[in-house]
Image (tube, rainbow, N blue to C red):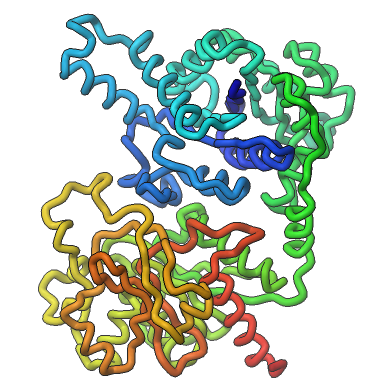
Length: 539
């Protein structure tokens, strides 16, 4: 029988339910269980695809083309899983489904209500992963905080599920904040007590309390919370601030989370096998060098907008036993060649990640030009690959006004253009999304990285390299290092006579793992480390 774990949050938002859920997934997987994580978000957007990255953060993309919450990235990276559309559901998607059913007459003219119609649709989606994967454990994170109006149908749904799957197969974990009052030198338990009281009033009795705190929570505080919140003492788990997110699973396992969950669900308490993860954390925390990477983007105000990119850079750093020092650069600040040279002078490598719209594009082009002319390792992802192409067209081919039609519809050299099948489409969910094949050109940086003639990577874009200019670029030396064989679309470009300058139309960051870095990120960091050594006279 599949076991179900539901993780809710209280007191304040941003406590790290996603990291906690991912960590628990890793802990249970290390005990030999098959685990699937999923996220249910109470907001009314259909998915995060059209949401502002500065407000919501990164949009994570799955193999099957779902645009999902960034927490799915944590789930995949920690548990080395491949998740799907069913792993992320929003209130908007739930309501849309129910209203479409109403329009089709499936409720036979009955009154459509939150209970039972909305809650039944939520439960159907919560159990969908069971049917698809037959996993031993399904871990479901409920977005938002208990007390939010929009989350009430989701709380009701997880209350009802217990009676459908059996109480012995259901575990509720409530994550809260235990603040420390410096003046009084005292941890305050009242916020957690009130949060538990709120969720109890909604019919949920937490089985496990997970407590976020900046200071150690002693046994007396745990016993007090256990007594007042009706939870056993060994099911009160502290989740202290860690050096890195990769330490969190190890800390939670040490605190007894795995044993507590197994106890509640009647799962045999097998020892965990986290040796590989521990070794990875040790490498991360003991670098032998530092490499400075300039991240030139347009959403740098919110670092979560580039979360998977940052994590992938760190993964490359772990492999090279290097601390990755990211210099966050707003591309709008790069106004001319002199300013760009001054700002990027200290960079060992430059990365330009994805994005949409024309704001800050000229600064990105200047960054790519600086990288090419000064032999600085450059990695362009999606928009960053298109920037590489535009810069090469302008300054090597001599097409002074070369551009993407996304930025300038009237350019006389549209080296990047809207894909033919994208004409006239609405914004939401219509990009080229998900996993596609890429045939790799022999004797390229790409082949060296992957060691394979064929790779599959995830996409999220609407504009593409314009094949009408392919021969012009090839004659000027640009290397077409990867092509989609189905549609002959250029997927990877490399600049010749350069230590490492590559652009990928896809998003390789979505498939990187801390103990298995994505090959392009791994080699980009390797090249940047080598560049740092050369600059410092240590080559």
